[in-house]
Length: 188
Image 1 (spheres, rainbow, N blue to C red):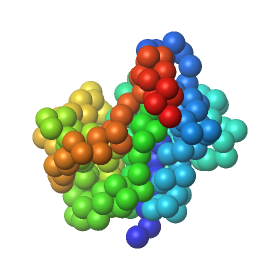
Image 2: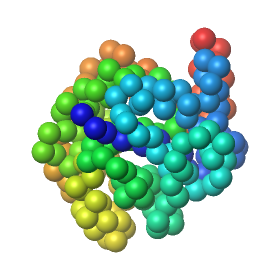
Image 3: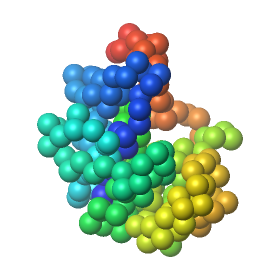
Image 4: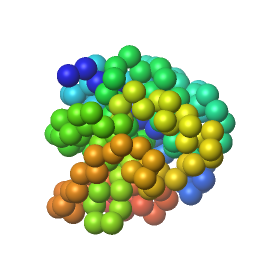
């Protein structure tokens, strides 16, 4: 199955005190490289969506947002435009605990849907999900309407919402603050 891995690294990282979260280290490598290593097990292409040149040195294709100030949805849209494949796994750069086996499950569950989005408890995980490139026009419509609420994507897209157990919930762990990062690194 041909797929592209998309790492969203375009955020302002304001809670991390302006340090790019994707360049934080985990198990001896940057978050972006760690995520890319997992993505490479199930995809044939890696794209990093970033609105700066801070990720250029990592060797991946870096795509900037085609529309400014549209949040993660704008990043997904911009990267999907550059993707060479119909299926795309999107992962936020601050989720270092991702796994190739979970990504494979997402790919197997997208079928004819616009997106396959996991749900843990009551929370959707749209920044660790699979998107079909065929949804580009729908995503553009949402952006044009300024509908940027990722938690409400199933109301606007044909989504396969996959209920996942909280067992193994570490893979949804977001590192948003210096305290989160300190906790992650102290547990290693």
